Length: 447
Image (tube, rainbow, N blue to C red; front, side, top):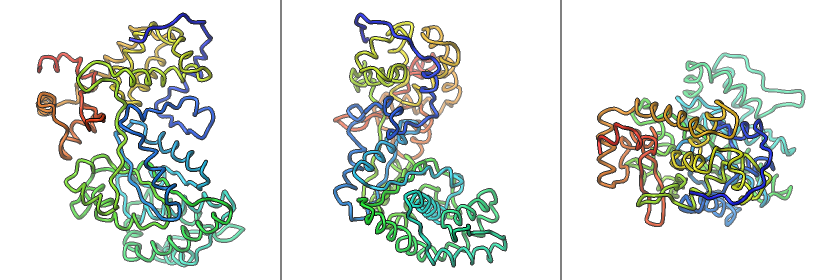
């Protein structure tokens, strides 16, 4: 347990702390306020994965690269991608980051949807730096789409044709209408190769040329939230992630700029992982959980310390790490209460924030041990109620045999449901049970 030194009490801004702990908020590292809350967990995640993504781009700025990034839901991928964006912008790259879930229906995604979303976001971002594109192919294509859908769509502004507005109006018309979306895909599918060629020459290629004329090192597109596409089967019988990234991965790879896609973690456990790697020519980069426990049991000291800092930086962002830790009893009943929160989170960043936020919804700081235990109990009960007898058996088998999760079924059952957490150290990947489940009477009886 962390032992506090003598401290000078400081006034905690409870409202600001509450807002900073919102688990739905993604830290944008380029913003000074958010940067105060950012903690670099790379030392306890098994390596600096963002540095790998960055170096792949900066060491070959004039070559189009395509990288795949994944990790457990809520482990901090979006925050790390904003860090990547900030670091690349410091090196004079024009970075287009967007959340695909804002443009796409994640239950029903096709390759043409992704290509149009990328084109819209890139062209809109370029207009913000006074780079306006008027690709002749898309002007003609949108006219044909209007005729085909027999739906009036206005693509012009007072200044003329607007590519992002044109794509936005088409996708808005079809996003809420499965029938129109299906018709549009039927029209676009045989034209995918020509659309891709037009994107590369008239949009990405032209954009890169104009950006470099302004002094930029190149163009980078980061497509976040594609890891959230549903695993529902397509008409071919393939799951949606397999269809998009394996069957159609060759086309996603062909974009004429630097691209980073987030992909569903289930693909790491697929029999076709090697096919995926061959399609893209690169192994997916995985963001593991934060190690708060050691492989052999007990606390992982460095991981625990960084999780403490993550909490305390949100309470006292203006102080040094050492000074923040001196203020623990302004935020918690005791240092043991903070340690309890860090341990039960299992190193899952969003889990910790969800538990902390729930405590702050109950009462102002300092957070009492009784309040935290009530929140943990509710969280544990929700988890336990979701575990079937077969899943209990599978959980015990993996833990007793000290196995890793194998295959898509075990991933969906145990990791996606957050019954098990996966970590990475010098020996490789390993799993441990969610600490909240480990405390349950039913789990202890099974042991």
